[in-house]
Image 1 (cartoon, rainbow, N blue to C red):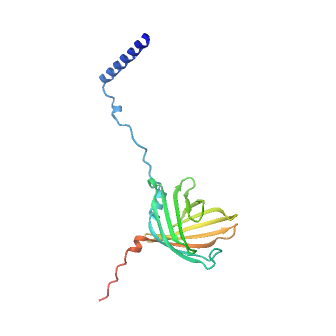
Image 2 (image 1 turned 120 degrees about the vertical axis):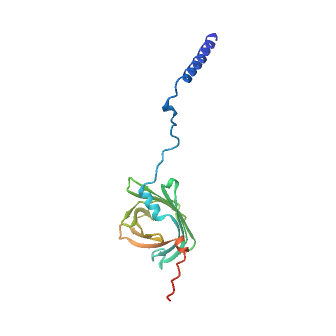
Image 3 (image 1 turned 135 degrees about the vertical axis):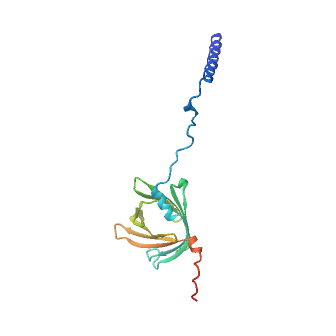
Length: 211
């Protein structure tokens, strides 16, 4: 026990001596510089910035459904959509709701981001018509249009889809969906016209009367 006490006293004395030595030394300039704090700053890619500029905003929507197995006579619907920035500006979050031509309310929620390895945009979509969310294919710019393609399985059959966003302007854009089953030619199934809410609410200036 006596040896342990002596060892503790020696350690304390050594510590005090070291502290005194440090106080006597000139301050190291390198130590004066503050260490960087927080996470490094990362900015959204130019591709993501371009998509945000094209889509971000609140919209009213008008749906036109082509005649098909579920709607032999086709149909129309109307609703609202919102494209908002995701965390850090690295994604876009879409919220969509409309009155379905088949009756009832349709509600959907999606997230879109840029995948550098795929060279295009990827997304995930969830809605109240399916118990599982859909992870889409890849969407790329084709001139002034955005064209996305994906493959999935529906009722035991392979289904391919092509979605095109065109006519992008400050007033809105148009969305067209085409579908193919078991390798058959693509067939147009629906169009959604997006009108930016601000543009719809802005009254046009009255025409000047000729004197």
